Amino acid sequence: MIKFCIDYLRLILFCSGLLIGIQVPAVVDQYEKRIDAHLTEALQVLAGFKQTADRYFNGSVEELVKHYENSDDPVFNNDARNIRYISERVAALQGEALTLAQPALWRVLHVITTPDKQIIQQTMQQYSYMILIDPQALIWGVICGFLIAILLEGILHFLGFCLLCFTPHKHKKHS
Image 1 (tube, one colour):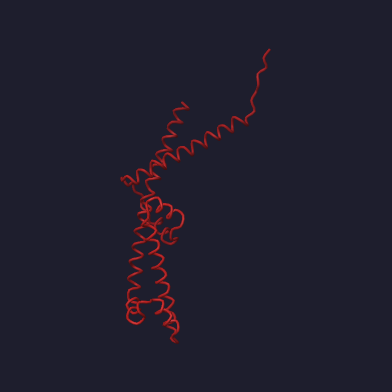
Image 2: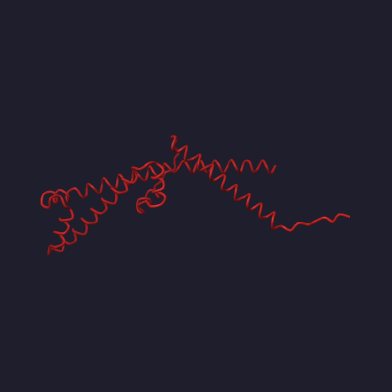
């Protein structure tokens, strides 16, 4: 009966890992779509300032910002900070988009380790769980299922071994 339960526990662990692993490409995909949407919006906001920079500063948004900063008008000074923020945000989002153009493993590692904090938070808050049936999702699912099952089973075996080692044994005396 115990072997039966252990076999089902192993199966449950594998299936749980499989379902978790299938979510990996879906999270990355939703994160990529958010980056693209934020970048599109930021470029639209910057477009008017870019036109002004093209007309008066040979296309240099940085020169436009310096011009605004050097103005005696507090409105222009304030706008300089806003334009700089938008310009820096566009550059950061373009960097994210470039990073996300890498092969799948690098995209996943990037999203796990160094994503844009605000955008990954939005992604996770509004994430809708799904089961993607494509080769990449299935590969991630099988790998995660296997790793989780092996890891947890290894931990359980280790705990069992520790219990056996540290449990006092009664020795029978032979007469």
